[in-house]
Image (cartoon, rainbow, N blue to C red):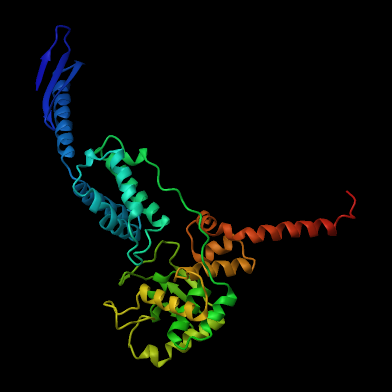
Length: 379
């Protein structure tokens, strides 16, 4: 590092460093004072040393810093813990295995394209005959892009490599759901009071499977004229979380009279009381003592097969079925948003707007009938 005074009274700074095996020279001219020149020289050296360090930083090292940053965002109220849980799961399963050995600045557009190629071939864990669903792939890539945006903001990279590569195109896929007729066909031959209770709660309340499995006796109120369940805890991958998916998800869900009667019958049954558990759907097979989402999914699949229902029905399909029922009852999107506890009506519209196609036809018919009933009125 050299600082010299020029004939015109200004100062010039020369800083020479070796960065990543390359000789780099930085010169600043026209500095008014020696003190300012010293400060500029120190800053240049510091910036170059930081740059040198960042060049040699691995993807995994920055990932750990990113997770620490996300935890701070949770404390500040800018991120949900469920969001971080999802990030960690996605990174450890799909992203880190591919990028683990990369230097963060060495990742290029071609590496991102190669990652996308591998991602599109990744097999579904539960069904090895199928690759990952389009929605899952898009979610993984979205998280990778968010990570590189963090790297860009922290100046680990000068360009986000994901910014040069588009996400996978969203596939428009009709959601599978049960009609009310199919629902009753499904339950008519079920003998287990527990299984009937699960299916009734999912269909007539529209709650998520994680919310259903997180229900405990102290979160239900069945002994008054307005029975309800309270969504506070969730169960995800065998772990009880003492928080809902989002702030809007944390709410009271009122349930209908029939579902209330079935739930009361289940709570008073030997099938439930033999477990001596505070949770509504306990299990001796799982480590956490609560029925797993997979077990519920397998149970639903079995009953659908017995009932001759040739649809791909999952626990989440009952949430779609609940929305379809509400639409059939004539409820608008705002009412449905509040019932299923979406944060935004845009989410409701994006998820279920296509199911309003039949309603659009009914609307035109109503306009036609309205015009006909008033056609003799003179303006």
